[in-house]
Amino acid sequence: MAATSRPASPSQLRDAAPFLAADVGGTHVRLGRVQASGDASRPIDVLDYRKYRCADYPSLAAILADFLRDNPGLTDCVIASAGYPLADGTVITNNLPWVLSPRAIAETLGLAVYLVNDFEAVAHAAAYVDASEVLQLTGPAQAPRGPTLVLGPGTGLGAAVWIPNEGRPVVLATEAGQAALASNSELEMQLVRQMLQGRSHVPIEHALSGPGLLNLYNALCAVRGEQAVHATPDAITAAALAGDDALARESLEVFCGLLGSAVGDMALLYGVQGGIYLAGGILPKIRQFLIDSSFVQRFLDKGSMREALERIPVKLVDHGQLGVVGAASWFLGHKP
Image (cartoon, rainbow, N blue to C red; front, top):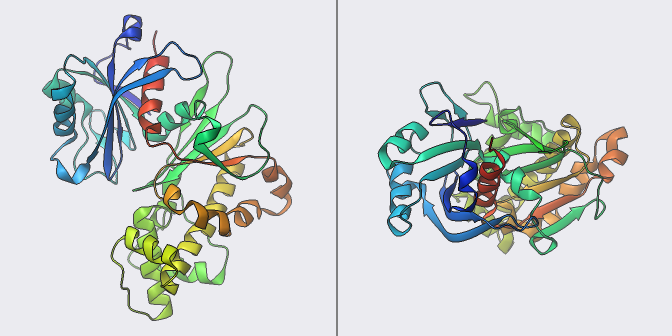
């Protein structure tokens, strides 16, 4: 997905000029004043970086205006966000508390605004993440150059595929989080049936996201006939990691198992060979729990395809600026 508030592409003259890059999530907006570095291994310099809570502001324009007060003179803005752009310039997205309209932002703030899918942006940044910023979960240290999957559960579940190509690589933005959730055990089937009440479809992100963990916990409490005592994903995670709440811990275990299965399915669906990056969201907070969970077992549990999946490196990325850097990388790469 890519859209602009005007038909022209970014000018080649802007290579050396700072610009604004935004990573817009359902809970937080991350902003950076960024600039091309001239270093091929790390092409982006982040000159200023800030994080805002979406719920504290009436619009994205208000957040950008706050940032611009301390960073005047910027004329270009690239926004990485989930959703589909419509002909009127607005974007359909499930997880934002307000309408996202690049055209309105351009008119209000006097910026040239460009839009890119959030995980398409992250995919552009993944190539610049070094070994100190990743945790290997399974697979070989190195993989052949090939399609690479980047995904992450946050307020929703985003996914994109980076595909090498002669010249500029191709990034396939997806709405994988809206695909139907699959279950592999009797308990998971019970949880899906519980979550189906009042719905015709349980998307993957209804279970594999921050809000999804809460959905799993509430469904598990209903299946077990227990009273839910936690009201937020953070509370469930904290209780699970503390080890003093069996239902919270079981919910997080189910979460990790379902995630392993879903990632394995996506690897096969998209023909992944170059590796898988799990980026952002809830995962860095539960990294040791994830390592000890059934994630890897469930990722590999694909019958005759197990051998193929064993050849794919799966890595956890802990890099708070990844979306901003990715949006900036996309912007610099899409010049005439």
